[in-house]
Amino acid sequence: MRASLSSLAPVCLALASLSLSGCGGGTPAETPRAVTGSNNLSGLWRVVSKVGTSTQRTAATIVDNGATLTMNDCSLAYRNYALTRSGNQLSGYYFNLAPITVTNNDTMTYSYNTIKRDFAKMDRDVAYDMGSFSIASPSFPTINSTPDVCVGFADSGSAETLTMSTRINGEMLRFSVSLTNSLRVGTFDIEPFGNAPATVTLDGPALNTLVGTDTISVLQGSLKITKRGTVFVEGTITGTLDDTATTINMTFKAEMP
Image (cartoon, rainbow, N blue to C red; front, side, top):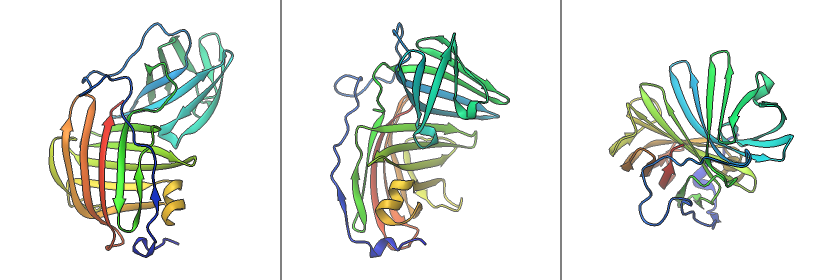
């Protein structure tokens, strides 16, 4: 049963805030991260999926132990895969429907039926360090995201969606921002029923642990995108959640994969 957010006592999660690593000081360059010449498959990987007319971009981490590897896929709620290597093939991925083909230590491909994925290494460090976000409300736990932040991006043709995930005590917390046409600089009304250009939702096991519900939406509010570059997106969200009483304020800085 969903709890009434406005009845919850405030809780504060004072987590360390994140600065983007690997991008240098000042304003990060609008160039996608990429590495070449790696000695093994360990690192942070960009995963670009083509499913029908939809393009989805997310990330995964790999720890390379030789014949065995561990992959963590944040697009599937930080699911862990135990992979085994035979030549240039990795088995054990995505229900083991097809192997991942290793081109080199910085490039891989996957194909099954209508699903095609290209893997490109973003960083040799095995870490999700792709942005930061904060969530604050009088009736909502204050969250300042940790250095463990993964970003996803999807383009359906009629809308673009930005998803940011983190883990709190091992549990996923995720929020998604969707905007008709494209994620562009400007201020847009939020509403979850398709009558406004923007929608914002929060979900995940960590949300249920914190406030007693798996999913919440911004019922009405405003999305302001202050930066949209080739790689980086920044903005703020203000509004009222779908219990009609709880106000919420959010800020986010995302490195799109």
